[in-house]
Length: 62
Image 1 (tube, rainbow, N blue to C red):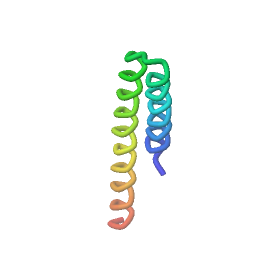
Image 2: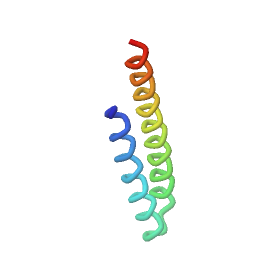
Image 3: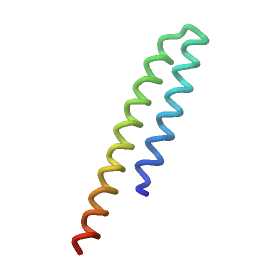
Image 4: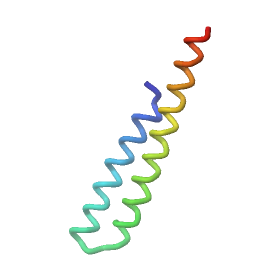
């Protein structure tokens, strides 16, 4: 499993927590930061999945 998948999932969780903090405190700053961090985490996780797919394909063709 590519480390980007793990790091991406962690960013998503951190972002969700910030988003929840924003909801609890009615602070839009945390809402925005949380949503951005979640999006970054999703992209990073997808990059990791793509790397894993390429590795798998290369192993099958080797």
